[in-house]
Image: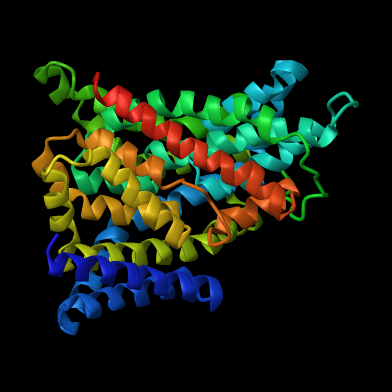
Length: 448
């Protein structure tokens, strides 16, 4: 490494450290903290202020151009499933059919299904109170808190895995766009890696982490409007429709060219923004019936969705700004030179960078955005499959959730754990997801 490389690394460390300080100690919103960190990186690395400002604008604009719509529509669909109790009906049906012994596995399966089109936070708000209620109804005896956690932790594992590894979640989707990965292959590989990862980090790991953790009553309760709970099949259609549309569009490209041309409209409708819009429009009558024109319901849906949307979109935009400044300053080129020596696997390097940014910023999505941006050159020169690179980055973005992660506090509130209990259950689970996910990516990428 040259002196300029060391200066660049030091600049990146100082910029990210400043972001951590502003977010954790000064209680600033991540949007402001990350922007300050981006300008600090530019200043310390020697970029002119005008060029740094242009990089910030370019990075934020590129991220928000399409992702803002995905975020808003995804949160809207999540609000509908929450307010109608559609997701609750799905969860209760799965837990009822599974019985007490199969409940942890039903909890995991429900989370994987419900989590497909929804943000982690939305899925958490929808699912954990329902799983907690089911856990409270389990036969008494033994360590009751551990029994409850053995139902709730698999749900968290399922939600985490699809959030980081499976499009149309914004993190994987942004990485796919940045690295020019194939959407259908990434979806397929993400499920191949994600399902066994969730099994290991969910029902299996919970047997060891749940005992001895004491629970208090949860601090938060889900919001619901006064409508009849829709049939299970209606909620299932609303949940799976965007994934089915996206997958269908990728499948069309594998058909003979004359047939693919006739089905070109499927390719258009499979765009993630269009697929989520169609799912949103279909979900309204499916979940609310004739009451879709009720202004009270419409206001509740979009108030529930748009509240967190602004915060999420701003944080994602600032993450894009930080990424672009790092790329403009030359970090991407430096990583290419580092990997060119063959000392580090490109996939392992991408995972490690994602881990560092996750630990620093607390945001899985920001870690994914930033890492994917600085890895573009490495994908182009190393020949590594961009689909596996997306998944390595996604796995690293989950590593050891702690106090600078808003999800840490949300999970703590819904589980009812104390600080040590949250670290023992949630933080360890996220770390296992990250490590197992990486190992499976490394193994599978050598075969496919």
